[in-house]
Amino acid sequence: MIHLTKLKALVFLLLVLQFSSCKKTEDIDPADATSKEVDEWIHEQMKTYYLWTDQMPLLTATNTALAPDDYFESILVKPGELDRFSWIQESSEELTNSLNGKNTALGIRTAPFYSNTAKTKVTLAIAYALKGSPAEKAGIKRGDFITQVDGKDLTPENYGTALSAETMTVTLGEYSGGEVINTTKTVTMTKAELQTDPIQYSTVIEKGNKKIGYLVYLQFLTQYDDKLRQTFADFKAKGVNELVLDLRYNPGGYISSSDILSSLIVKNLNPNLLMNKQEWNTTMTKAYVDKYGPEVFETKFRNEANNLGTLNRVYILTSSGTASASELVINNLKPFMDVILIGGNTYGKNVGSITISDSKKRWKWGMQPIVLKTVNAKGESNYGTKDGFTPDFKVSDNVIPFKPFGDVNETFLKVAVEQITGQPVVASANARKVADKQVQLLSNSFPLDNPRADRKEMWVDKLPGQ
Image (cartoon, rainbow, N blue to C red; front, side):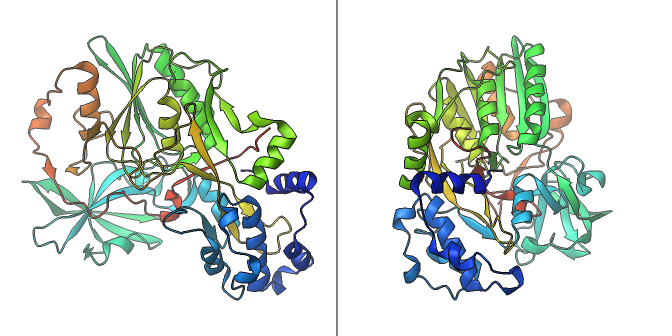
């Protein structure tokens, strides 16, 4: 995570900035801090780092009597329209943990859908259970159904909070005769602190002369960069000549990890080629350019030894949950190779953030404001809208029961394999016994049981010039 003390020191050194609010709050005891003092600190930080700082209101034009979270929202520039992404959290420690994949949760992502024609009942289809999570340990897996929690049917009114308790007993459903029905099987689970392993699944699928690497990647986390490299080393050793990257459940993460993934995939890897460029606000741009020169915001491809080296194209599975650092990988690769998108429109986030907390520990608040925009080697960044990237092949992820990751009959993967091979995927005899069914989803973005673990973000862990 980026160290804001160093960043602030650089700005002070280069521009000799003086912040009156810093002087006011300098000697405040944490127990005595008022909303006004916290709000002044929020304004000070935002005025320095916020991408749209030139459009922010002056401190004197704001209401520093507001609670800090309300105050933060009040000074955002066109929230929900221009700035759809900046956020604040009462605990900076919890904020940092969630960004690093640490959360207290069951560890399941679900797809809620109406399970009867009257639309009075809801079923949660399991998209996946995180490795090592309470859900996985309890035997929950992709393709399962939850129909009741603590003996109560799920309904349109209660399904959104049904998994909020610390401990719960869920009833599993069964797909039979085109419907999901209750079974007698129940599972009791208790939420626990868990660490996301983003390498959810990988395999090599062989079809004729095609060796297709398939990777389900859930989040860009630096502590798993070497595991990501090893996955590509395995692909390379097995002679992979096509790649399907499943990012439909990936909300983003560290920009540096997206740089690595892009460099492992790109055709004709050349570490002298520009991959992307960051754009900061006027104040920060001047500070960094004066210190390091105009190329300080440029990122070039990394010399990754496990770059596959055989790819002319990459197939990426997408949804509205494909966001931020995931979209950055798509944008990074587009100037250099064919990038074929299969699924739904992506989230539409071409801007990144930094984590800001108080170095003097006068309060626990942490902020994640937008501070930069990214463009690719061609200067393109036209996906930063609510439409995101539009897929080349539109596919809805609403066919139940969900098939296991790596099954070539799985809704999204099937399209990719057919496009790669030019041949239809023929269902196995066992697969033909179960008739698929399209259902009406209640959410386009499959939620995690802990919403804070699903922030649509990309953030920097190294300062420009480092």
